[in-house]
Amino acid sequence: MANDTMKSWQYSTFNGKLEDHLTINEGPIPAHSSLTGDQLLVQVISAAINPLDYKLAESGLMGRLVIPRPATPGLDFCGRVIAKHPSNTAFETGQLVFGGFNNPGKSGTLAQYTVIPGACCSPLPSGVDPDQAAAVGTAATSAFQSLTPQSLKPGSKIFINGGSGGVGTWSVQFAKILGADVVTTCSTGNVDMCKQIGADEVLDYKKTNVIEDLKKRGKVFDLIVDNVGSSADLYSASGSILKPHGAYYQVGVGSQLTMGTMAATVKRQVLPKIFGGHRYNFLNMNNSSEFLRPIGNWMAEGKAKAIIDSTFSFEEVPDAFRKLKEGRTKGKIVIHVSPSPEE
Image (cartoon, rainbow, N blue to C red; front, side):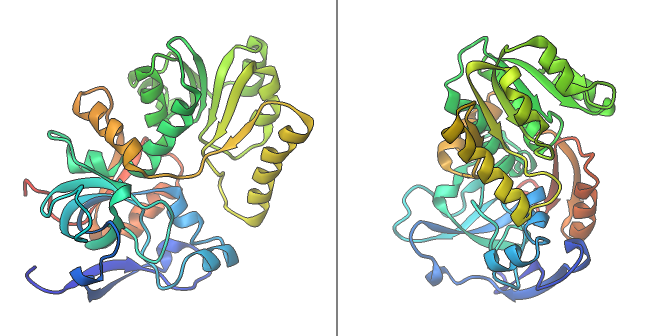
């Protein structure tokens, strides 16, 4: 490497908005000798941001307990392997890879270099653009896991709450690849986009009382996937919507991540086990190569693609978070961290 320093976006303890407290700091590139287990030292080419990147950082005491400070945000990336631990035989130096961390921590992907477990990465398939691959990570693996655990059969009927965001755009595409019939929701401006990526029916929540519309259909859904998570109404109504052996998966955590919202989630998981009712599943992130590889293959085959709302330069990271917080993005926001292989 030409020099031994790198730039990264970091924050320390703060009150208020993450984007107002981010600064670019310079520090040493992690030493090759510091790698342990299956770790990779990766030069980040592109990174994608998620709501969790700011929600946990802004959650007060909970965020401070979980994430040591100063910290670099960012979970998802595409980059080049610079070094690997000798025990890691799954990757080669110079190889392009994509993936994401399983949890926010002290080191993230909004840095020119990062150290990440190889188990959280997958080789970049030929023909897949780094921006597309960076947008996979947390959103796509969450969408994948919310669908495949049910061993969906062709013709299964799925309701996806929130089909136009980072997770939802993947959910709709994967469900269609698996042969499901998909009903989803979005705002007026995103209806056409949801149809273009494969949704069979799109409910405009600005014009329709979604819960009442679903109840009128009866118990016709095999699976509900909630990518929004801002209201308990959908789960409360699930008994009138789901088939007897249907399942409910919550992926979104709502507008805020607090002790109260987490307690409500635990309550919904426990009560059906005691009193009966449809099982409530809260999806835990798992950026595993087990999920990344098939997603990458689908992309290489042209069956799925990332819907990218916008891209920002590395210097514009605070603006990228402001854009994400507007809550009106179509798909993912990607950050250009280092020059792509073609540049």
